[in-house]
Amino acid sequence: MTEERMALIELAEKHADDDLLRELGQLVLQRLMDAEAEQRCGAGRHERSEERVNQRNGYRERTLETRLGRLDLRIPKLRTGSYLPSFLEPRKASEQALVAVVQEAYVKGISTRKVDDLVQAMGMSGISKSQVSRLCEELDERVEAFLNRPLDGPWAYVWLDATYLRSRERGAVSSQAVVVAVGVNNEGRRETLGMAVGPAETEAFWTDFLRSLVRRGLSDVRLVTSDAHEGLKQAIAKVMGATWQRCRVHFMRNALAHVPRKQHSMVAAVIREAFVQENQTEARHQWRETADKLRERFPRVADLMHDAEDDVLAFMQFPKEHWPQLASTNPLERLNKEIKRRSRVVGIFPNNAAIYRLVGTLLAEQTDEWQVTRRCMNQETLARVVRRGDTGNELLIQSEAA
Image (tube, rainbow, N blue to C red; front, side):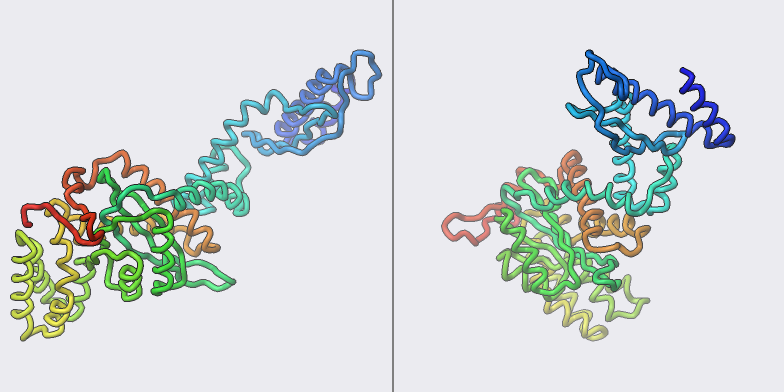
C-alpha cells in the first residue's frame, strides 16, 4: 500500500497539468493488469509460493485510445497460456467500430485531414495518413472478392463506359482510365460486372478487360451499349460477338459539335424524332428523312447520321419495353458522376491500388443497392429475348413489332 501511495504522490508532483488524468489513468490500468496477472499466476511478482501455477514472461506493448488521450500500456505476458486484460475485452467492438468509421469515411471520399478531425472528435488522439492506409487495406479483400466473383447466368444486356482519375504511378502524375461494365441479370436487376484501371482506352486494354469478364462466366450477351471509341468497338466485335448499340447521347454530342450553338436545340429536336417512332422500320425512315433535310445546311451532320444509322438504332431490334434503358449509357453516366464526386476530395490517388479500393467499394455498394430496389426490367419481357439453339447466334425476339 505504501508503494502505491508513493507512486501516486510522485505522479501528481511530476504532472501538475492537464496530463495528470491521462498519466493517472495509465498508472491505474497498469496496476490493475499486474494484479490480474498475479492472480493468474497464483503468486506475486518474484514471490516464492507453493500455490504458484504460472510465471510472468515479460510484457508486450499496447496502446489504448481513450477520451483522456492515448495510453501506452505494458500488458504482462505469461509463460503458459495468454493473458488479455478484462477491461480491454469491451474495447474490441469499439476498435472495430473505429476502423469501420475510418473505412466508411474513406469510401465516401472524405479527405485524410477530415478523417483525422473525425477521429479526434471521437475522443481519440488523431490518425496519420499511413494509419488510414493500413486500415483501408482491409477493404481490399472485400473488393477483390467482389470484382472476381463468378458471373453466373445469362446477361442479355451490357453497358460499358470509362471515366478518368489522376494517379501517381512510378513517381509521375497521369490520368488513368477507369472502365466499368454493368449488366442485367436474368432477374432484371443491374449488377456491376467488373472494372479495370489502365493508362488509356486502347483496343488491347479493352480486349483484356472483356476477356476477363468472359473467363468469369459472362455469356449470352445480346446487346452491348457504349460510346463510339474505336478501340472499344473493335474489342466488342472481337470478344463479345453481340450487337453493338452506339449511345445516342454520345452521338448527339458528336453531331452537335458540327452545328452552331444557336442551332443546337433545333437540330437535336429533329434528330430525336426517330427515337419516338413505333418500330425500327419507321425509325429508319424518319432518320434518313431528317438526314436529307439537314444535308444542305449541315452536311457533316448528315454524313454522320448516314454512317451511324445501324448503330444508333440497333436497340430497336429488342422489345420496346427495354428501349429507354438500351439506347444510352445513362445508368453508367450516373455511376461515373458518383465516382467523380467521391474521388474529388482525394485529388491525386497515391497509386492505382487506391483507385481500385475506393471505386471497387463504391461499385460493390451500388450493386447491393440495386439488389434491393425496383428491377430495371421486367422478367417476362427479358425472357422474350432468347437465342435459337440451332445456330447459337440468331436472335428471336417475340415482340409486337416482330
